[in-house]
Image 1 (cartoon, rainbow, N blue to C red):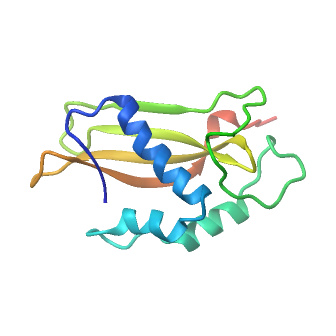
Image 2: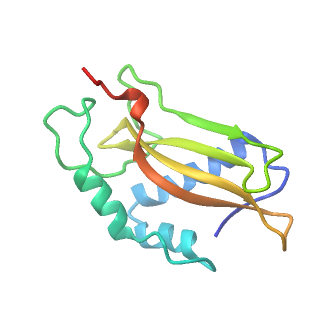
Length: 144
């Protein structure tokens, strides 16, 4: 599980997401996905990420068909600032916040987003970060 303290700042929450993405970029894919499924249903597997990357296409990568997650530390912007958003929904009985984090692919920031949900935990003061989806940010799409 990816836990954050109840009083974590938005930057600290984004840091946990960034660390998760960086683990994948460093080749620690199994460990990154083990963090997501520890103690909860076994929803996310590395094969899901492989499928998402194999079907990803974007005008940001003309002619490219093979993608891998790369480090945020060296990702180039190339005219597009990456989304790193924390949107709060308090008070809300279901969840606290949605975190959208653009994932760097092939050395550049992409429009592929990891979307996390921040949940309260009844048995702890820590909050749970849950990977909800990895999806293309439709706001960047050219519907021509």
